[in-house]
Image (cartoon, rainbow over all chains, first blue to last red; front, side, top):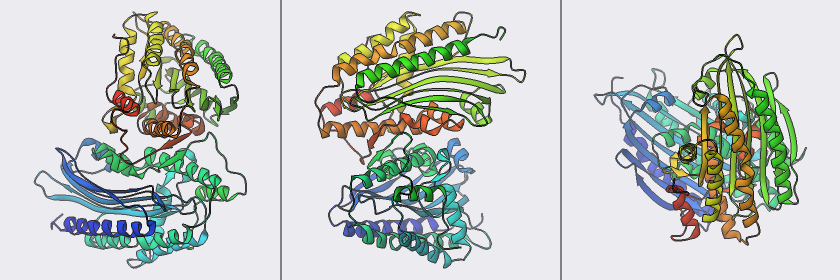
Amino acid sequence: MTTPIIQKNEFTDHLVALQKKICTALEEVDGVAVFRHDDWTRGTEGGGGHTRVLSNGKVFEKAGVNISKINGVITSAMKDMLHIQGDSFFATGLSIVIHPYNPFVPTVHANFRFFEAYDTNNQIVDQWFAGGTDLTPYYLFEEDAIHFHTTLKNCCDGYAHQWYPLFKKQCDEYFVNKHRQNEARGIGGVFYDYLRGSQAYPINYWQDFTIANSLSFLPSYLPIVHRRKETPFDSKHKFWQEIRRGRYIEFNLIHDRGTTFGLKTNGRTESILMSLPPTARFVYDYQPEPHSPESQLHELCLHPRNWLGV
Amino acid sequence: MTTPIIQKNEFTDHLVALQKKICTALEEVDGVAVFRHDDWTRGTEGGGGHTRVLSNGKVFEKAGVNISKINGVITSAMKDMLHIQGDSFFATGLSIVIHPYNPFVPTVHANFRFFEAYDTNNQIVDQWFAGGTDLTPYYLFEEDAIHFHTTLKNCCDGYAHQWYPLFKKQCDEYFVNKHRQNEARGIGGVFYDYLRGSQAYPINYWQDFTIANSLSFLPSYLPIVHRRKETPFDSKHKFWQEIRRGRYIEFNLIHDRGTTFGLKTNGRTESILMSLPPTARFVYDYQPEPHSPESQLHELCLHPRNWLGV
């Protein structure tokens, strides 16, 4: 790599501003709860983070909007996990997980990340952007799914028409409980990793792309919250939400690379595990009633759909 | 290895009889719920299991008492995980996890296992016994802890006085959430792995030892259930139980080798994950009130105690 570039600071500044914007918007929708602020450092290692968590709101039962910005030595565990070379690294990212109280409002997850590796002379030897946004409904509303995917597609299409189908497919393949016959966590979205610079798409292109995607987070999700947050529900719906939340936990703790990476790089456990739902339920061999709305959602997770026909 | 031995069938027969005995005893204590029986096979691969799960009882909210008996080709994933050689394997075990409803009754886990590896000529090249029993209380009653550890120690002492202190230490080291500053899952018990035959302790010695330990399971646990099952509790106690159940899930899905082994050897997911508690709660940065019974239990998990002074 020849020219050192400035993604690092520009991207971090963007994430800090976006974190504030998203927290403000969520507090407005909730109307009751506010975000708690926890700033932390990584002790003798480098970096730290800004954790923002809202709990027990009227609309949101648990919501985390976290920035981490860490640096340090590349350990052999990291080399194995990330398939990278280099002696030291810098990594920054914004992670968002929102667990609404009402089972008719979907859970959403997004993250937007930048990673840079350096050699012993502190020269950049690798860098990439990564991220994505995905939705985990408990009940299917087709108009919500189409709104969500359309927003993400429109954003991707501003760069090239190939990205949405590619990153939608990667999302369907990633957020999967392999130990449950590849059952998806939800209805997907977009997911991209290792977006390295090339002649055709220099690293700045991917920075712009990732920033644009991060800005499409609120428009992809908030209209769905507004549409569903007053829907009446009972304990049966809540039970099903907690069953699906159990699957969410299984994915995050068994399969998710972000969680594993965080725990292995001595990240702050409470900030990493803020992604876990506030309550969950594990019932032996639970099967939703055939032809019920619950069973429809379950079938959808076993057979991901192509929402926009592309 | 010279003489092929008959551990395989003798040990399996013992586990089948013990499974029945334990289920009957638990049904008697519960008085309401009965075990559901699910027998399964591993498809085109070899073996299967007998899963017994009781749900929503009066005393037990969820209890699993499972036998698995599998065989097959040793994959490279298994070689990495188990640090073994050989071409094919046989593994059998009894796994017990009991989640009581009342937060004053502790959760208990035990398993008793035998593993055998064969070369291409089907000759035994490795074999070992493994297992253990450990207790996860939500509130500390010293007399319960002492009863539990004394029962396990008495059983181990029947073989040699060195085993209890050694296997107690291994238990304290194993059932730990490394990502939470080595917080223990509970108050331990005994844990042993790779008990291979030697001149001093032939494999039959370890078979006897493992069988004796498995027979001490009911006496170590049932008196505690009887003592605590009528203790009055309220939603505050249940809340704390669900917080600790969250830690139980974290350990099982992130760190437990048994869970990982089961999922990687194409075990039956529902049988493996029966260990997960029926309900759980994940509260961001939850801290029990200082000097409360909850805080006392938490402190105990951070600083394992030597219950019997040995």
